[in-house]
Length: 294
Length: 246
Image 1 (cartoon, rainbow over the protein chains, first blue to last red):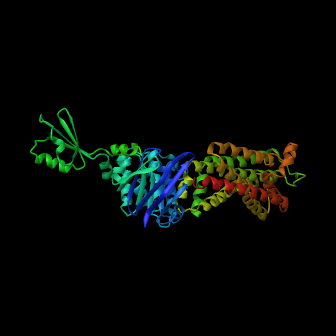
Image 2: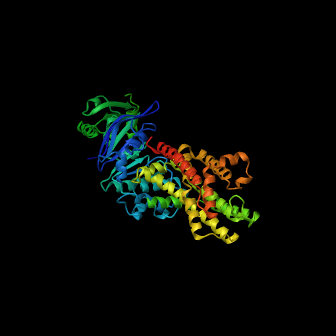
Image 3: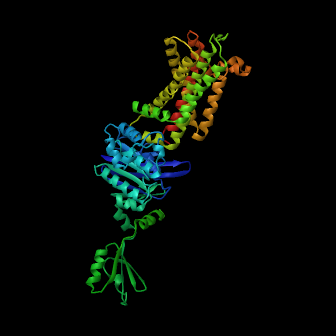
């Protein structure tokens, strides 16, 4: 049974069609990134998965149950945007309270350790920095040891260092076979942390693949080297090359398969200098996917 | 459910505004008024000496304030902050949330009742039967229900910025027109005309009746029940509308 099964959900707010006919199946144990620019419909989609937003059409199931039922059984943990904390409770109290609502919570000390909150356990939640508060939201999401963890822009308030620690914690959590779905507009985060990337634009899924495949789709990789005065003629006939670009003394070959191209270069007896194989940042892939007219 | 009640109570008990407005103010006013209107002569209407009458007024005033102030503004703030959404993702049932909030609001009126009562015993030598104390405390607990409903209604309908002045406004109107600050007999006639229909007047009357040694009138019970039913129905509808999935 899939951990998350979204079937043809749609939702409009007034005349704005936030989500249009999205279907998505996430098997248990997968880490999925929902990647998209602001306003793409990520939060609405996540709200529908959590039962916080009612779809106009379609349906959502978590482990075969509707979202409210799944929440009632303690299968779901979530970090939702703009979730302010309860100012007059300590970190330990608020995390312990949320964990205690679940049938089989994680031991409290373990949760605090995982979220990096051990030293802040006695502090009032109202007296935390933005980054610290974000760690408390993460702790609340995992405190009940839920099977499905849904995170909406989880690293929004974090600096680089805190972001790294955060993803390390998520990976530790997911390593136990749990399903994690997170929304982000940070491309590197999707690239580094997800098994699968679902790209959302204008309320629709425009791509759904591994991070590597997404990059591939944006035009593959480039092989670049210095010509050293030799003519560039004939390079376009090498196996695997889809385009050739020469700028001054530098040749740039586009290809889906750099290994074949490089082998062919050496096989042709060319003395290749300054060889460089580059992969376009996921950002380029992302832009080409989300800006395409569909 | 109990753990939720515990965190609801903890949050308020750690709030200095709550402690000041709902405990210090009623006790302070009690000491002030009972010192000024010192009198062993019983009031011709209620049959109570002023030290007992003011004790009931200020205990009612404190309980009314605590219940209103801990429902409306907090609910509005929690709707805004996303805390209620966070709870909806957990196994805590939505119905439990509203039941616990109501219980907490009612119970948070109790410290004021107990403290004002104690102040009256210690500083004014007020003496009532233990059964009377128990009955006053219990009635001033149950009797806060319509105010908890009113607070829930306000908190479900408006945002935190509007909830604060609305709640304060309701608090002062109900307290003054309900005869908690000054006896109804000295208030203008137009207030006295409507006072009998107000829940706050009838709420204070519960305590006055018991302090005077008799059961509260059926009218008082009916007026409070009617307000509870009416405001309760509106509050439940508004809360449902405010808390269901958008």
